[in-house]
Image (cartoon, rainbow, N blue to C red; front, side):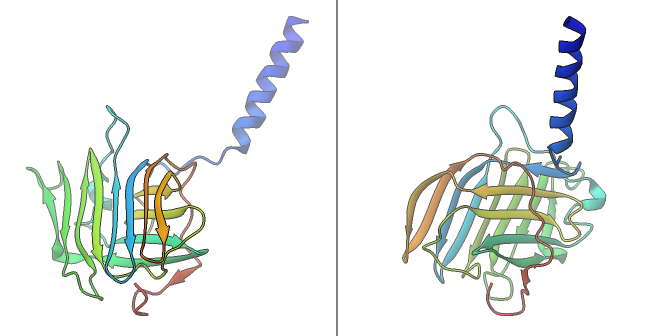
Length: 196
């Protein structure tokens, strides 16, 4: 009888494991500390690991110094994105990138993010303008930051505690890490459309 019970438990565990869709090796499912959306003015996100954990930095070949990176926002079922490339990224530490990466943008329609920071204890983006949709927004809002080819990315989903959600702005905080990284492929709004 014990053997039958042990086999039944083992089969249950195996079937359950098959149903779970694991994250890719380079996907980091991260908790969201705060997200702010102010229509036409600001979009800001701060991701922090649960202490004492830290975020893994991207592999050098997948870093923003080596390839283009995007930020993605999902609202009302559509993904909006912006590409952050080139010499506006710097590697922090010695050697460059050993302590993270920093992006300094123009804060314009074409380059809305004034700063993006990727470090072991924080991922942060502060950008001007809209993300392509305006509050109020029902349900969670997905945010991702990472390599354009999805080889390395940080994924968050802002449900969490809603502080504000009206026509003047949206604020959510303390969102748990998502179960998986949603794929932003297939439902993009192009970044040249003027919606981002």
